[in-house]
Amino acid sequence: MPKMRALGTSITYAPAYTSNDTVVIGSLTSVGEISPDSEELDATCLDSAGGYREFLQGFKDSGELTLTGYLDPDKPGQAQMVTLYGSGALGYFWVTFPDQATVAFNAYVKSFTVGPAEVDGIVGFGTTLRVSGLVQVISTAYENDDGELDATAYTATGTPAYQWYSNNENNYDSPTLLTGETGATYDTNGTPGYYFCKVTVPNYRPVYSQIFQVV
Image 1 (cartoon, rainbow, N blue to C red):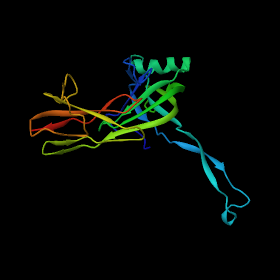
Image 2 (cartoon, rainbow, N blue to C red; image 1 turned 120 degrees about the horizontal axis):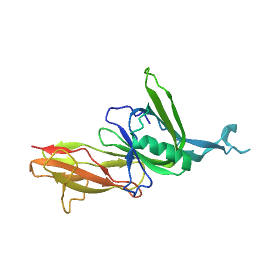
Image 3 (cartoon, rainbow, N blue to C red; image 1 turned 180 degrees about the vertical axis):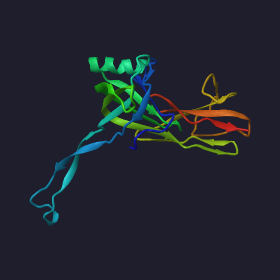
Image 4 (cartoon, rainbow, N blue to C red; image 1 turned 135 degrees about the horizontal axis):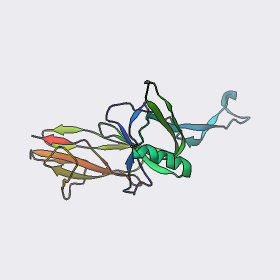
């Protein structure tokens, strides 16, 4: 996966995917790269074709994610990372990109650092998350064809479910549930307003599509 440096990118922690006790890890300058890998098992036999070695895939490993930024004692997310390092507890993390694509995973805090940063006079903060299990990627298409909206979701695993909402403002606050609109697409029939879709994959927090505007 590419390094997650885009402006507007954020990473959030919760004790579990069902928890409402969430905190954003703020004052970050870089969210690193997740590079899943797997073990290699040698399955070579005396009768292997042509005398070539043969291999099978072994256990998979989702690796680590490094976060770096500036120390800010007023940011509860940074304090939470220190607490998690002390407890060793697994937590649920998700990275949200400006286009609302989400990378979600479980991890524990493997390490943290506090010390000089690249800019004189500013103290740096860093932490490394050790990913446990699968890394889930949930992204949605974004298509508005004359009021016919498409939020088809693409996931690493699992079957997404959909629920559409409308709103009078360009945000996700206090929307109106569109009863029965549970498909990947929604036809507004040209009704002006703002629309978005909530996408839910089993065992992961719901994510939202980008906001569509119909004028």
